[in-house]
Image 1 (cartoon, chains in turn red, yellow):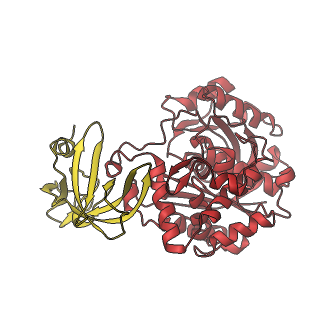
Image 2 (tube, chains in turn cyan, red; image 1 turned 60 degrees about the vertical axis):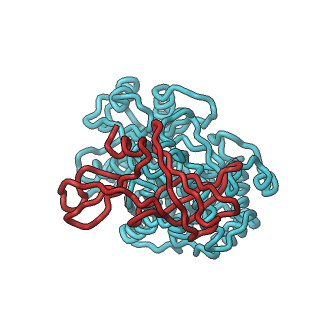
Image 3 (spheres, chains in turn blue, cyan; image 1 turned 90 degrees about the horizontal axis):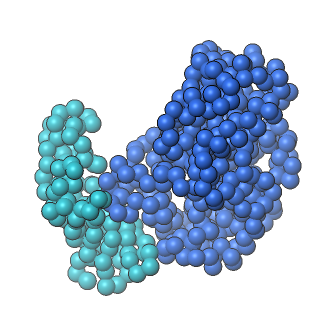
Length: 368
Length: 107
């Protein structure tokens, strides 16, 4: 099995405005290829597109607009974690020897259809994510005595970190007080506790070990992968847990031969504020009881270890692009190219991307 | 419309179960996920318990566990603030989506 490296990246700025998915895909893919050393369209043997958009045949459409005639091209949809699922599929193609180089592009328009899972009859009319977000939050408060302020700190921290991310949908700072006094969505959610559906696109080029050095002076290696789907319907969840994340993390750590204490920087799936607290606990970075205190310390010491690009809350959440943007951030961190967001001496980084209230999770461990 | 949805429209929550495995299948499906036999239906007794709740504007909502471990999201009507573990009675309808609503008992 070949090792697999990330050798190129490209992104568009996220936006609240609706935009055309085909155009967005082209923009980020073009930036990705332009940023990659010696890259010619003939080198690209696979084009995978991740999106929740209903447009058809996007792998072939992106290939044609980019002047690529790949061996492999198709779309991948898995709600909010479509992006990492596409990267992991590309990993499998390369490590198995079916391909040496794959372009993975994800995009979404702000009015994407991916927020509601119609199949899940157990949600009834309460099928918008704010309902499960509220119940997870209420349950976390009840079980772990998590305070409104601790939840608000997640959002304030991620908005602050997003100020230094040129691709974030908003670069406005938000204080803890502003978050706590923002529009009330439910008794347990404020508008600034929620990630926002956006338009945006991100692309990444993956290459085999044999080819990686040709295309990058600093290839970043995918050292660990873990995935788990526990169900599709939200109501099977235990409210205080994200079981899929815990299982996926364990697999990823074993594959990378690391423990959670070895992680220097992580992008976690903060769909709502409470999700960041739950994720860092399930990843083994802290415990549920101490997660609020952990994030408070990060905020007070300006430590950007968790969600340096601002997470989903700060940067925006174009579903099909999110997992790829998370991966690009960790890649840049491990290459020392994150400017003001840089974590000193980052050697090992983690991406946590999940779908539908954590009914499935994908984890990747990257190393330089 | 599926049988489950047609029955909801008539105010009946049908529980899908496998007689062979003695297990409920939720969300409902024609085939058991364990033994692949055809599943059967039985009417819910329409009782449940509140597992967690929150409130949007003036409407309480929550995660309710009804008969035989089936969980649904629905609206909760209560004269006072609901409590976890409280018993509720379910009523259902269907209008393009299932609609589950619950009334707190003894309140």
